[in-house]
Image (cartoon, rainbow, N blue to C red):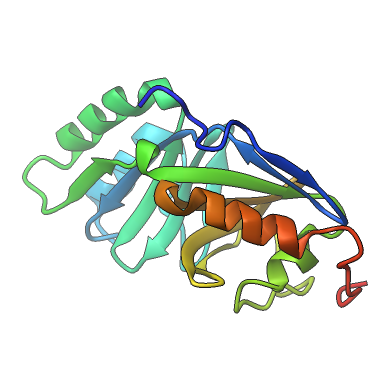
Length: 187
């Protein structure tokens, strides 16, 4: 697919801003996360270490996020995915692994502003209180009933979900951040 957005860069303003952003290149890498060869492949592609449990590591625009005990999500520039897959195949030759380009399967949203944490807390069964959820942490959970992963970065929260539920996820987020909907729980 050539369009890196699903909803045409949809945006909603409320006590938090919700906006769709172009999906970067994303690679699902499954394998033995304790393997030195897998760690070398992750570092070669992203410049990052293999992240620990519920963590995301960043090196410039590239990231490596923990998704499961045997899976990391590698985030790279969209045009770099073919070379990254080739590097992974080379570094993990002979090792049991799976590397798949999932860039076109995902929609990506940003929640920004002082109310971003509160808007997301309305939808996800995760403790998002300051101190419980901070930059560098990643959660893979449900957004209402939609599988999603999100992490906090400077200026906001990035959320990734399946492309097929992008409209539903955006509408959920926009409703949770709607004007007049702030509860002040984290104030």
